[in-house]
Each structure stands twice: as structure tokens, then as C-alpha cells.
Amino acid sequence: MNTVIVTLLEILKYTVPAAVMLGITYLIVQKFLVSELQRKQIALLRESQNVTIPLRLQAYERLTLFTERIQSRQIMPRVYVTGMTVGELRQALVLTINAEWEHNLTQQIYVSRQIWETVRHMKEQELALIHGVAAKLDANAPAKELQMKLAEYLSKQEGDTPGSIALAIIAEEAKKVLSFGATQ
Image 1 (tube, rainbow, N blue to C red):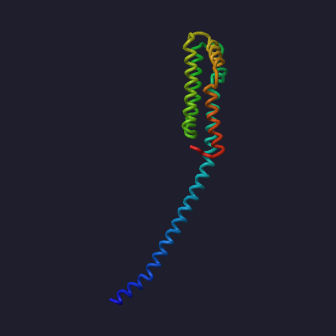
Image 2 (cartoon, helix red, strand yellow):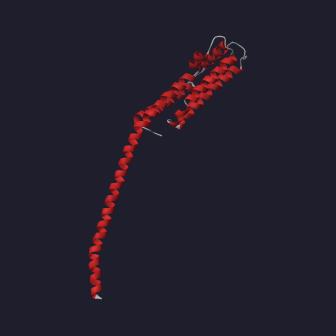
Image 3 (cartoon, rainbow, N blue to C red):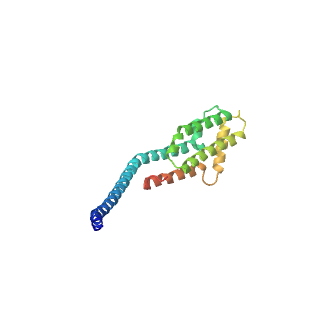
């Protein structure tokens, strides 16, 4: 029995240090692999931001342009044609706004939900304004009446317009993206 214990102790004398070294080696390799993975993830994130930030900024630019273009003060001179009726101008305004909207639908991929909902809500308010003012007029009346009523309504507006609010929100988020990178 003495030889069995001596043999067992001899085996333990070699296996315990080997097991300890294996455990230490495992921990060192594990820590190295985790740190290397994190380093690669950070590099990938930086690389993707180099692509996505310009796309996001372009989306902010396009939504800013959209917001500017569909405001009643801006769209009226582009759409109004002498000889139109109120009904024709109303239809032309709605078609133009919807065409602009459809042209910019893909921008929602690149901006926050808040920005997209703000721009969508602003568009709906512009359409509601056009429909509301036009509904009070005879559809066969000269379009100049609708143009004048819209201008009169807008001049009586107190405070910020939906368009200026939307533009301020877009600008604020674009500044954040420029300063801090993607923040979504």
C-alpha cells in the first residue's frame, strides 16, 4: 500500500502543477481573446459610423429641405398658376406635398423615430390647413382667394409654426450626431 500512495503522490506532484498552469493559461488566453474581440468590435463600430453618419446627415438635410418646401408660404408660389380655381390649387398642393413625402420616405431609416414622427405630423398639419381653408371657399372660385386666405391665416399665427418647430428638432438632432456620433 505504501507504493500505491507513493505512486499516487508522484502522479499528483506532476498533474496538479500542470492543471494549475493549464488553468492560468486558459484565463490569460480567454482575457486576450475577449480584449481582442472588443477591440475588433470598436474598430467595426468606428468604420460603420464613417459610413452611417454621412448617410444620417444627408437624411437630416433632405428632411430639412422637405420641411421647408411643403410649408404653405414656400409651396404656394411653386404650385400656383394664374387661372386656377380653389379646387385645382387645393388638389395641386396636396399632390405636390404627397409627392415630396413619397420622395423622402426612405429617410426614416436614418433618423430617429422622434424626428420622423415630427416631420410626418408637420406634413399632416400642412395638409389639414390647406383642406380646412379650402373647405371654407367655393371650389370654383379663383385660386387667388385660397392663396390670400392661407397668407392671412399664417400672418395671424402666433408662436412657432409646425414647420419651424420641426426644423428646430431636426437641427438639434443633427448637431448631436455631428458632436457625438450615432445616438439612437
